[in-house]
Length: 139
Length: 403
Image 1: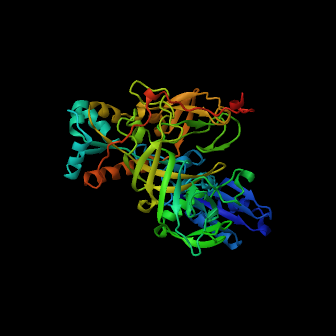
Image 2: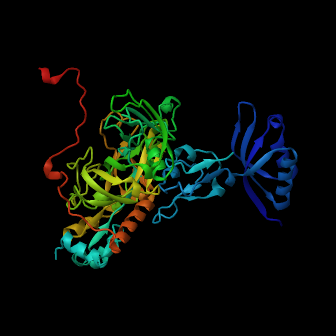
Image 3: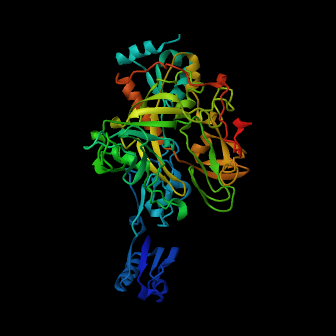
């Protein structure tokens, strides 16, 4: 039995692919579970999709290669939202804004804000909500 | 036995002073008791790091040639107040660039303002100075554009009319849409409760009756040295207090001064409150001399002993109705959940507790190494006995003095 691997990725759809059943193919052909976290289509019909993909090791790799071969670009969500350790003062204002629990104070003695990038869904709400300008988004 | 500040300073000079932070003193008192703690401990250090809008800086640029009476002045596009002597200005933390759309595109981002100019100066960056004037015989220049740097200024000092609030509101939103306030983004239907105080580490909560903190008190200010020079604006000593004297709402405030040239951007930060404006986060640490057992009782205050009022910022606050929904303890706020009207509400802080702790620790090390001596206050702040309150503004349609 191969281990099931799970990844959060942010996927960019160019205009010409917007009407193709790409996610459906990913599920049927590669036996990948797709959990749509966020989907957005821009004015020019380009799309951004944040998905959690999980499947057995080889399947997941083959599925992601399928996306690459189609010319879609994607990267792990953990590389989309970044925190500047210099700007962050650990105030905790972001913790009540972050909907996914990625920004959280776990240790209530230390009171430091942890950024768990694996839980980030790249919604971007923390960026303007941070008074200290510590959060940046690179889609 | 009671100690004097003079005696404490003798011990500081000899590097023998016993100094604890306002956090460390709590278990110390629990273990040793008040009498022993009062005899053994010389100083307790406090700290806070929080956005404080009533902040700003006086700057003197020196004269260009030919000389100029700078009338309108901008620093990196942010207006500074120039109606002082020729080359003096005051730049306020909340000033935004003339072309900033503010809340016309709601909620505004306020990414740059006077507070950020102050931070850039402290960071040692070049800042664009632009000035215009009408010209006089002695000051003929009418326009100026140049770059300035903190080190080249004659004087540059923060003069913050209101800092170090002794306790403050907890903000919630009872409406059904998100609102943007100086206490952060408030989610609808009490989605969150935001606060901004260092609680048990906060300076004035450790000296609730201003017995040792007064005019002339030397402090840690933005990473350098500063002084308390007056009561702060909206200083309001006669609020409700608990048995131990701790106010259970916003009470005393301090007016502070300090040389920007000794400050660090780690402790002075420009902040952007979405939908509200720019502000300055200021790091302050104040030493409390342990003169006797009474002072030990004060610095022993714990987050669980300090309560803050919960106020609805969607209606009661903007309409100035003053209705308090509930009182919650800093212990619960710090633990991240408060119970308001039977609902569990996640709590978040705008001030940084870790940085407040860091500041109290640095001040402690300055005192331990003999680098920072305590001062006697030269005049007291108005206390409970003054009867002084915080008056609201009455809107009048006619001149009352002509009747």
